[in-house]
Image (tube, rainbow, N blue to C red; front, side):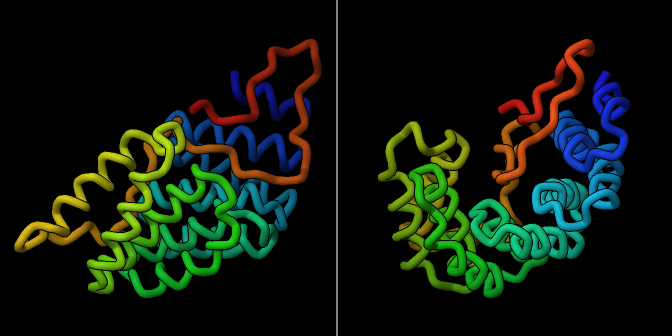
Length: 212
């Protein structure tokens, strides 16, 4: 059913990007990768397609490819918090918390909502733990739990509370060096100024936004 979307837009990069994102949220990462790569053949500067391809590579644990995709996504949309923060996730996946911390610093000014701040604090705290800065990490986890409950996903709040407890124990267990990724279906569509085309009205529409 999803493929009918691109039958009416065979040369639309956005159509293939939407299809790729939909397959990503279904957990079909190989098919997502194929569609997102097709989107980039049609528009190599699509920051959104680069972003979703990066997320797909993250799920496939191909972190170096993910990093390259996220760098390109951020290069083509330097105002995107999601793309810049994803660079940090890729570095964490590669076991490079120092580079992840540097990447997080570059997007601090783009965290303009409480939801984005929650992601920022978690990403920075993980990186800080990775570079053996437990006190600074503790402060970021604390900032996260102090945000309004509606702005913080339950899984992220649970992680923060667990790390706060661990960091105040006599011998805190190490945090995971790899990035903590959202499960399929929870990702928020990457923001872009380009409108996403819809298929002709004679065909059933699919939502271009991955279902939370």
